[in-house]
Length: 372
Image 1 (cartoon, rainbow, N blue to C red):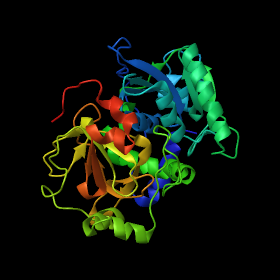
Image 2: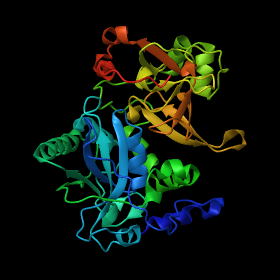
Image 3: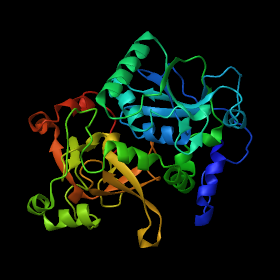
Image 4: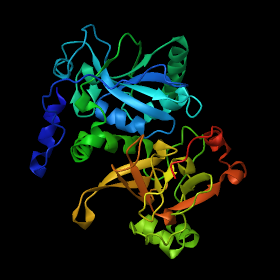
């Protein structure tokens, strides 16, 4: 079933959903595999719009390319693949910096963004071309993927068997240019498709809304205190922002101009959210970031308040209102996570080990040019 059918979900809203119009193929914008210090991995997780968006928000990922793999036909088109006649799967090829994220870390992200028990597709998209799979590039990736799958099976997270396949990568074909970075180019249409697909609703039901899910990367558990503890812990402003979706004034908040190295955690739960490495001066007067430190700790929801449609950002375990994300940020993500300082606690790099966040010191080991 083509993703075009999911458009029917939104007719009642009078808005265009995930329709993919016919265009002339311009060729992929696949990156040079020999880019310095980069490695790459290939995953199929249903709609490649969603998979690409999820991985490109991951710290250490430089770029994700939407495409097709697993079939026998050369240079397949979207129409051919979506019809289910070529044997290909919609997939993404992820280019990442191994000094910032490991292949194991990518697998953590992958499992958190699919339904690994569904062998017939993913969410609203049905058919073998939308099933989930890990395409390994070498024996080491194969062993790592098999070990990760086995750990997930033993975790008891899912009642059904894990259906995700582990297959050798043959050839990856970049999708048509209009599919690349679709979530940026057609943000509103993408948001409505994603909401209607049921993907995020499923992921929230599995991984939890208020702190019952483990943080796979850090190995720690974070949770939301009860109401009495929250009232005692938070200032009135912090409570209004995190619990009542308030907004603090611009240029008059704690972290809007902070340039010190360190990480930002949820003021409620303590879960790590953003790093100073991805912080930049957006000119808005609020702390702004290009991508999360821990994508698994970030939840995005449609926000229709104030007579407009925006994407709200909340913490996964603390369920705190953090702010909003907009598609007008700088490269490489093109995103602007505009947050409230009142939702955050800053931990300087020098204190991260003492505070129990030593695992994230690796983020600062390689000196990079600042976005500020």
